[in-house]
Image (cartoon, rainbow, N blue to C red; front, side):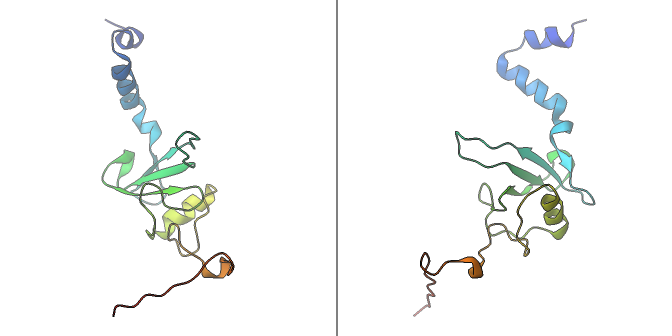
Length: 127
């Protein structure tokens, strides 16, 4: 019988990484307390200019659809801007240091914080 080390040694690098990922997948995805949703945290990457962020899934262990992904700044990641996340999710991520806005909308715009000399508000109407 082969040891796991021998089994990995006989695999290509890609196969070994895939096998290890499958083996430890349960440690990669964590449950959001009080929900059926799970999340995976990814570290910041200076090469791709991404922040520390989390991907949130509908079911345990990364199952189901990805619901959204959120940066530690509270902005949407991978196209999740403008999404309102559930209160229990927002509270959980706030407890982990994420700067989720009070309205729970990722990358929401707070008009009171805009400096007039830097921004213009333009309203467009259909003619």
